[in-house]
View 1 (cartoon, rainbow, N blue to C red):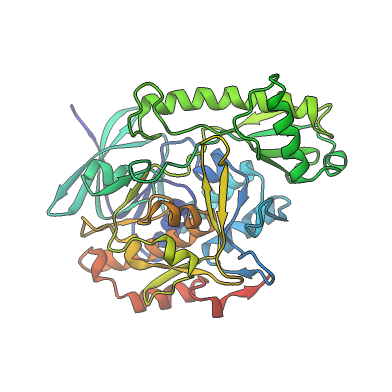
View 2: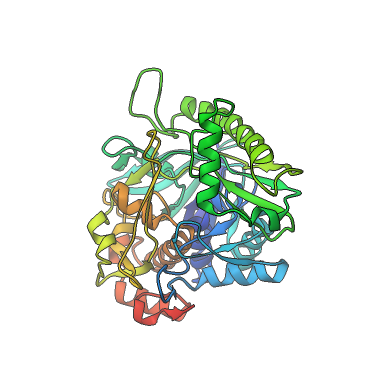
Length: 444
């Protein structure tokens, strides 16, 4: 089959979520010719297709610290220029969240990526990779016009599902093969909500109403501790309520949402659950008496699928002890937030020491089995529970900025990830606004 030649780039970034878009911006700003490949018709990944709140900018605790800057700050400024942004406490004590309009964020990402000088290809899926001695030399991209070829000196896998590493044959852990995979969530928004009346009941009281509705037999609510929150749009709320297991209920095989059949079933089940929660809210929750469904998330929200093996894997002990690394290029103060599907367990939370943050080492963003591939975002090199902390979107932006800068440095040399001078990289990141240690963080 004839393939369209899309050209050759210093750096190709696959996936335009918080990690991928930040990586593309940082790479292009550093002078590398950069292509950003995205499967959706807009940029942002989960940040625009599923959610409306950034977590991870601030540590929780008695004195919140701002531990992410750089490209993340540019994103917040872009949102504030277009409309209101709400800073609000997390329902479960995970630190201050930044709630925004996802529609505005699509444009903010596009503006930042375009003005950086990066090329963008939407509606495009990676289908294969050409690999020689651990070096990716080209990618095969599926488009509406057919298959296309794209050559790269350095590659960044920010696909969330580690699609590049999967097609290249690089090692990864499939979520669910060791620890239970985190559940999936279809989010939705409600309009015509009386926020004052909604504010008359607490989180715990909402959960009691969920449990009562479920036990009545009149509602099928798999998750009993879901949450809702106000948005920048008056009288509109957004929710995180539905819960879908990454389990093949037909044969019990270890699969996850990279399996097309499970993903299909999950998308359909997520929308079914969403309408049941809508009915519950209108029937049972103060402030929702006259509310209506405004929108469902564009796609189901995925917390983990494949996690790549890097030169280092961040662990649970690293997170909970707030470990620091000589080569750290970002910080995370978010707790371990592990979403379970088993009845009676729900979501578990484990917190770092007050005011502390774990470092994200450069080695965890270098793909173990490749000489020229980086990974960033929720598919980076970490164990299940460590990833459940560091997958927050602000950390994805910080990881993206780090690998985008590193990829541009590598492209100026031999194109190899391990040839990057990490001290020079850390200096560059600081100059471009990144926060690399708690001592550099600013109190909220």
